Length: 219
Image 1 (cartoon, rainbow, N blue to C red):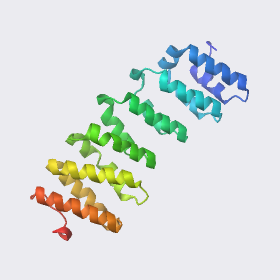
Image 2 (image 1 turned 30 degrees about the vertical axis):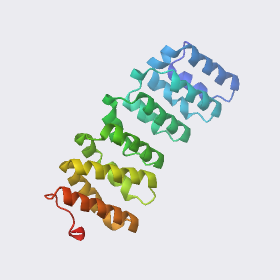
Image 3 (image 1 turned 45 degrees about the horizontal axis):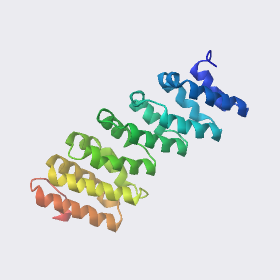
Image 4 (image 1 turned 120 degrees about the vertical axis):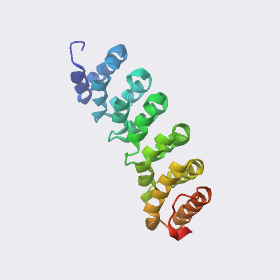
């Protein structure tokens, strides 16, 4: 197997022969340095339909890859995989390998992810990374709009986002202006419960930042 390119090794993950897949597993375990070096070429192993390969690859990539090799692009590749198990791995890898340097690019890219699980996952980093960081928060405007606009968004996700925006808007005028923009854009599309929450936040903003324009509806 040493003579095979990584792309050729990965194709063995599709083999119908269980022994071949087992040999591939052994090769990965015995050649951790090579897999680290050729990580981008190795990750398509998850495209196999064999669950035994997916399971050992899941465990392998959790523990055998150095943090420095997990670039933002490769973390996003795992998160964007069509298989739920691989997406879960991606979220776990981000939790393990998240850093200040990777923070903003990850949040900016993850905000566009369509799945409910990923939208909720992003909220884990709002308080820990984006809180009091005006530059980061302003760049997440599309995430806030998407999360709050769609009716089928996880309720816990919406609750976290509402709380975060209200809290940050109290502190910073720039965030208050953005929050007003986001909330007024969705005001006419929400349920009565959300409308009440939105109006409460807008009233709070108008009381703290008297020079920030809010909809006439709430004045």
